[in-house]
Length: 262
Image (cartoon, rainbow, N blue to C red; front, top):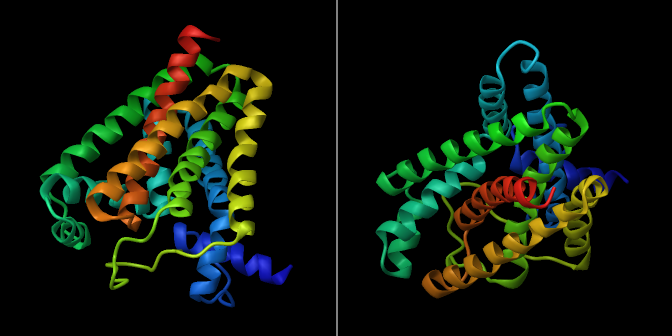
């Protein structure tokens, strides 16, 4: 039990800014194993973001509450995935060779491609989430499930790339923390169990929500092909970009389902 707790806290320490016990140390083995709990980070971030939205909705408009919930998510993760999203757009937008793309992504400075991408990212999140909450404002339980699902399924989609691709940096270099690169069946089983459980809970409310997996499968497939074509694998920034793109796809898919099937 203590070993599993240490593995879980490693995931919490690596993917969020939430304080962890001092006895949780870092090793590559723990980081690799912590992948099994990556979707649970989505539960936590989504749940806390919902809590911020819910409490703020008693005082402010839906739009302000949504903006504060988005800010809470960024604060909890330290903009971990948003940073990867921006670097990914800078790298693939400004580089035309593998080495150049990797060099740009490694640069901590943000460029034009990344800046513009972030503007559209947050605008789409804000508008889509606001519209969803206007539709479902009378059902707090459904709203909570929506928050948890869009954070969890996005992480589920991104981590699947690591199961089927290779890490791209030959020298194992990284501008930040190392990334998990080795997995056993326990990690795969954990990702699929924890990643899909909130979606199954949502489908109890309305079965068409299961269809969200279709556009996410497309995101996974085409992202993996694109990364393999240009850099022969993935980097942490690639995963962050896929995670953020998946959040947008999930929110837009919710809106399509509400309009045509629910």
